[in-house]
Image (cartoon, rainbow, N blue to C red; front, side, top):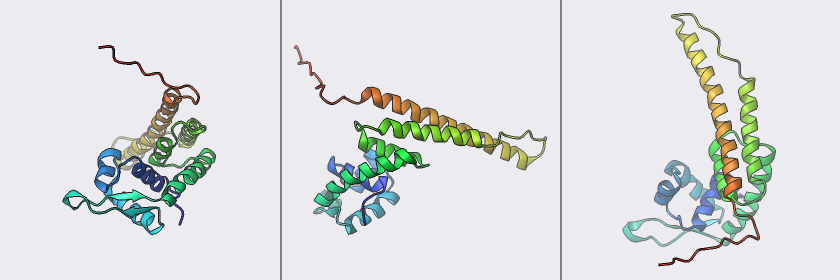
Length: 184
Protein backbone atom coordinates (compact mmCIF):
# COMPACT_ATOMS: atom_id res chain seq x y z
CA UNK A 1 0.00 0.00 0.00
CA UNK A 2 1.80 3.15 -1.13
CA UNK A 3 1.41 6.36 0.87
CA UNK A 4 0.02 8.34 -2.02
CA UNK A 5 -2.80 10.54 -0.78
CA UNK A 6 -2.04 14.16 -0.03
CA UNK A 7 -3.20 13.59 3.55
CA UNK A 8 -0.88 10.60 4.07
CA UNK A 9 2.08 12.47 2.60
CA UNK A 10 1.26 15.59 4.60
CA UNK A 11 1.19 13.59 7.84
CA UNK A 12 4.56 12.06 6.95
CA UNK A 13 5.88 15.56 6.29
CA UNK A 14 4.55 16.77 9.62
CA UNK A 15 6.24 13.86 11.40
CA UNK A 16 9.55 14.86 9.77
CA UNK A 17 9.19 18.34 11.24
CA UNK A 18 8.43 17.15 14.78
CA UNK A 19 4.66 17.45 14.69
CA UNK A 20 4.19 13.92 15.95
CA UNK A 21 0.95 13.43 17.90
CA UNK A 22 -2.70 13.53 16.84
CA UNK A 23 -3.12 16.50 19.19
CA UNK A 24 -0.31 18.42 17.45
CA UNK A 25 -1.77 17.53 14.04
CA UNK A 26 -4.99 19.20 15.16
CA UNK A 27 -3.42 22.18 16.91
CA UNK A 28 -0.63 22.99 14.46
CA UNK A 29 -2.00 21.82 11.10
CA UNK A 30 -5.76 21.96 11.71
CA UNK A 31 -6.25 18.29 10.83
CA UNK A 32 -9.18 16.53 12.46
CA UNK A 33 -8.72 13.44 14.59
CA UNK A 34 -11.33 11.75 12.39
CA UNK A 35 -8.98 12.12 9.42
CA UNK A 36 -5.61 11.62 11.07
CA UNK A 37 -6.27 8.53 13.19
CA UNK A 38 -7.32 6.30 10.25
CA UNK A 39 -4.45 7.74 8.17
CA UNK A 40 -1.95 6.96 10.93
CA UNK A 41 -3.33 3.43 11.14
CA UNK A 42 -2.86 3.00 7.35
CA UNK A 43 0.64 4.47 7.46
CA UNK A 44 1.61 2.25 10.38
CA UNK A 45 0.27 -0.85 8.62
CA UNK A 46 2.28 0.10 5.51
CA UNK A 47 5.49 0.50 7.52
CA UNK A 48 5.74 4.28 6.96
CA UNK A 49 5.37 5.24 10.63
CA UNK A 50 5.78 3.54 13.97
CA UNK A 51 4.53 4.33 17.41
CA UNK A 52 7.11 5.82 19.70
CA UNK A 53 7.19 5.07 23.40
CA UNK A 54 4.33 6.73 25.21
CA UNK A 55 5.29 10.16 26.45
CA UNK A 56 4.26 12.22 29.43
CA UNK A 57 0.58 11.97 30.35
CA UNK A 58 0.44 8.80 28.22
CA UNK A 59 0.43 10.77 24.94
CA UNK A 60 1.00 8.68 21.83
CA UNK A 61 3.80 9.91 19.62
CA UNK A 62 4.62 8.63 16.14
CA UNK A 63 7.90 8.47 14.24
CA UNK A 64 8.49 8.39 10.51
CA UNK A 65 10.44 5.37 9.21
CA UNK A 66 12.98 5.23 6.39
CA UNK A 67 10.20 3.89 4.15
CA UNK A 68 8.10 6.91 5.12
CA UNK A 69 10.88 9.31 4.18
CA UNK A 70 11.24 7.61 0.79
CA UNK A 71 7.46 7.70 0.34
CA UNK A 72 7.42 11.49 0.75
CA UNK A 73 9.96 11.97 -2.02
CA UNK A 74 8.33 9.64 -4.52
CA UNK A 75 4.76 10.43 -3.47
CA UNK A 76 5.11 14.19 -3.70
CA UNK A 77 6.72 13.96 -7.13
CA UNK A 78 3.93 11.65 -8.30
CA UNK A 79 1.16 13.89 -6.94
CA UNK A 80 2.77 17.00 -8.43
CA UNK A 81 2.61 15.35 -11.83
CA UNK A 82 -0.95 14.08 -11.29
CA UNK A 83 -2.26 17.41 -9.94
CA UNK A 84 -0.62 19.36 -12.73
CA UNK A 85 -2.57 17.30 -15.26
CA UNK A 86 -5.77 17.08 -13.24
CA UNK A 87 -6.04 19.11 -10.03
CA UNK A 88 -8.38 17.60 -7.45
CA UNK A 89 -11.66 19.28 -6.64
CA UNK A 90 -11.01 19.57 -2.91
CA UNK A 91 -9.03 22.60 -1.92
CA UNK A 92 -7.32 20.98 1.08
CA UNK A 93 -5.55 18.38 -1.08
CA UNK A 94 -4.18 21.16 -3.25
CA UNK A 95 -3.02 23.18 -0.25
CA UNK A 96 -1.40 20.17 1.46
CA UNK A 97 0.59 19.35 -1.68
CA UNK A 98 1.51 23.01 -2.09
CA UNK A 99 2.84 23.12 1.48
CA UNK A 100 4.83 19.92 0.93
CA UNK A 101 6.19 21.21 -2.37
CA UNK A 102 6.96 24.83 -1.59
CA UNK A 103 10.07 25.72 -3.54
CA UNK A 104 9.64 23.04 -6.21
CA UNK A 105 9.09 23.83 -9.84
CA UNK A 106 5.49 23.38 -10.89
CA UNK A 107 3.71 24.22 -7.65
CA UNK A 108 2.47 27.57 -8.95
CA UNK A 109 1.18 25.85 -12.09
CA UNK A 110 -0.87 23.47 -9.95
CA UNK A 111 -2.49 26.37 -8.13
CA UNK A 112 -3.10 28.23 -11.39
CA UNK A 113 -4.50 25.11 -13.11
CA UNK A 114 -6.86 24.53 -10.21
CA UNK A 115 -7.96 28.18 -10.46
CA UNK A 116 -8.54 27.84 -14.21
CA UNK A 117 -10.61 24.70 -13.70
CA UNK A 118 -12.78 26.45 -11.11
CA UNK A 119 -13.33 29.42 -13.42
CA UNK A 120 -14.32 27.05 -16.23
CA UNK A 121 -16.75 25.18 -13.97
CA UNK A 122 -18.24 28.47 -12.82
CA UNK A 123 -18.79 29.55 -16.43
CA UNK A 124 -20.53 26.23 -17.18
CA UNK A 125 -23.08 26.66 -14.41
CA UNK A 126 -26.48 27.92 -15.38
CA UNK A 127 -27.12 31.47 -14.22
CA UNK A 128 -29.66 31.87 -11.44
CA UNK A 129 -33.19 32.00 -12.77
CA UNK A 130 -35.56 34.80 -11.84
CA UNK A 131 -38.09 33.64 -9.29
CA UNK A 132 -41.63 34.56 -8.46
CA UNK A 133 -42.63 35.84 -5.06
CA UNK A 134 -43.63 32.98 -2.82
CA UNK A 135 -41.80 30.31 -4.86
CA UNK A 136 -39.78 28.89 -1.98
CA UNK A 137 -38.13 26.16 -4.06
CA UNK A 138 -37.27 28.67 -6.79
CA UNK A 139 -35.78 31.12 -4.31
CA UNK A 140 -33.67 28.37 -2.77
CA UNK A 141 -32.52 27.08 -6.17
CA UNK A 142 -31.57 30.59 -7.26
CA UNK A 143 -29.63 31.23 -4.05
CA UNK A 144 -27.85 27.89 -4.37
CA UNK A 145 -26.89 28.54 -8.00
CA UNK A 146 -25.55 31.98 -7.06
CA UNK A 147 -23.61 30.52 -4.15
CA UNK A 148 -22.02 27.77 -6.27
CA UNK A 149 -20.89 30.20 -8.94
CA UNK A 150 -19.61 32.77 -6.44
CA UNK A 151 -17.78 30.10 -4.40
CA UNK A 152 -15.98 28.73 -7.45
CA UNK A 153 -14.98 32.23 -8.56
CA UNK A 154 -13.75 33.11 -5.06
CA UNK A 155 -11.72 29.88 -4.85
CA UNK A 156 -10.23 30.60 -8.28
CA UNK A 157 -9.22 34.10 -7.20
CA UNK A 158 -7.74 32.82 -3.93
CA UNK A 159 -5.74 30.09 -5.70
CA UNK A 160 -4.39 32.61 -8.21
CA UNK A 161 -3.39 34.93 -5.36
CA UNK A 162 -1.70 32.06 -3.49
CA UNK A 163 0.28 31.13 -6.61
CA UNK A 164 1.42 34.74 -6.93
CA UNK A 165 2.41 34.95 -3.26
CA UNK A 166 4.23 31.65 -3.43
CA UNK A 167 6.26 32.72 -6.44
CA UNK A 168 7.32 35.88 -4.59
CA UNK A 169 8.05 34.11 -1.27
CA UNK A 170 10.01 31.10 -2.47
CA UNK A 171 13.77 31.50 -2.29
CA UNK A 172 15.50 30.84 -5.55
CA UNK A 173 18.24 28.18 -5.55
CA UNK A 174 21.77 29.49 -5.55
CA UNK A 175 20.93 32.77 -3.87
CA UNK A 176 21.68 32.46 -0.16
CA UNK A 177 19.77 34.64 2.23
CA UNK A 178 21.94 37.21 3.99
CA UNK A 179 21.38 37.52 7.70
CA UNK A 180 22.03 40.85 9.34
CA UNK A 181 23.82 40.71 12.66
CA UNK A 182 22.33 42.53 15.59
CA UNK A 183 24.16 45.76 16.14
CA UNK A 184 23.46 46.36 19.80
